[in-house]
Amino acid sequence: MRAVDIDDPKAVRSARRRVIRMVLIAHFGADLREHSHWEAMLDSIEATLEQDDRHLAQFKALLAQLQRQS
Image (cartoon, rainbow, N blue to C red; front, top):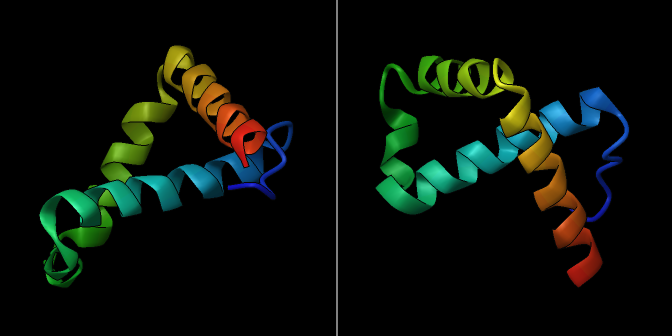
């Protein structure tokens, strides 16, 4: 996450998807990736978060905080 340019919407979108993936795998286990609806779940979660400007701002703030801490 250190290298993500928080002013680049494409970079932030890519980072968000990676974070969503990591959180799901950490919480539910790596076998979740084998589920037939894995990609659809990721797409749905990502689309839901993109619909709310507050989520976008909070994610960018999280990235900025992580970058400051590293």
